[in-house]
Image (cartoon, rainbow over all chains, first blue to last red; front, side):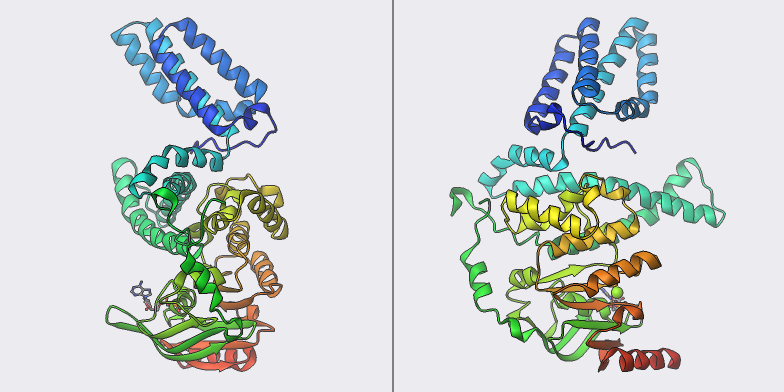
Length: 213
Length: 246
Ligand SMILES: Nc1ncnc2c1ncn2[C@@H]1O[C@H](COP(=O)(O)OP(=O)(O)O)[C@@H](O)[C@H]1O
Ligand SMILES: [Mg+2]
């Protein structure tokens, strides 16, 4: 699994507010699609690498992992474009997407989840006007990041347990035989997690009403 | 200050009477029409209380009653005089709870962030929060791991993280439900030592009987009843006799 998580380095990029980094990322995405020229995409890729490897001093492996994870997707994209349009447009499309993925990886690797959560909460602030709780949206975001690896690990464990007893299903059948027990485990875990949230005071946060009353 | 305490929450702590400990009065619990606990009358004031018994005897349900995760279907549970039914928030602030499986209680992706979670809920200001998190990580041997993804920790480290996340909130009492069941011997011993060193009142449900060395009082639960209530020696002996008769 390739969740590019925070890579602790003391760099100016790390110190930038999360909101600023996310805004830059959004601006880059808009630029790449509003000005779809190879020159722009090439410059953006170089810029991303300079910021990520130079200014933020991230290990090459962190970014390489992201690119590697997408290799098949990018390859298919390239082939489809090459067949329906031409090779140059295929390369260009791949370049843009790769740049965006790497830029996103730079942002996640230089930003603590808690800061990201703060931005999500900030964006969710209007919810408060209708009695919603932005902290909950932030928590949801953090918990998604936390439990994806747990889920994958549980799925692996189920597959290993099946293999240990001679079952080695592949393809669709494997999906079916893994999903049912995984679902059972996840329901149990969801119950346990909700208890843990309660025990740690998830409900202790006094509800703030609009107007601060 | 991010969160304002409601007046009710302040009143809760005003009426607390710490000397009273944990009281169960005529407590019973049923899930649907299945009776899981019945006829429990206890006052727990000792610093170290153990709970042992067979699988399915009702230990976890008993433990969950103590901080209001489960409410009694009969009788009353009071913590420092606060009723878990009517003052559950105040009760949970006084009674921390550590579960068997750390994976289910670590809710943030990285170590320091998870420890901070409970403090955020309590509305502790950011500066104080950071200081308390750093101190907790140091104390529980996780100082080098502040920014590590939680899923890359070992089983023992995960349990230490789960415990740190509870203790950083400084509850007056802590309930542990089989905290060492999923750990190897080395990590189980670390957790046992950690528990032994706590200044809080501690209630521990366990199958690791050596965890109970030096405990003041051990309850043996069988078929939903407390069938023995004694110091560790006699209580463990009674538990063994019970098991042999099966
Ligand atoms: N949420 C629940 N709903 C229904 N039955 C439950 C629930 N939790 C526990 N039980 C049942 O209550 C009994 C006591 O469970 P528990 O308190 O977990 O025992 P122990 O921790 O000693 O193994 C068991 O038979 C269990 O199946
Ligand atoms: Mg249990």
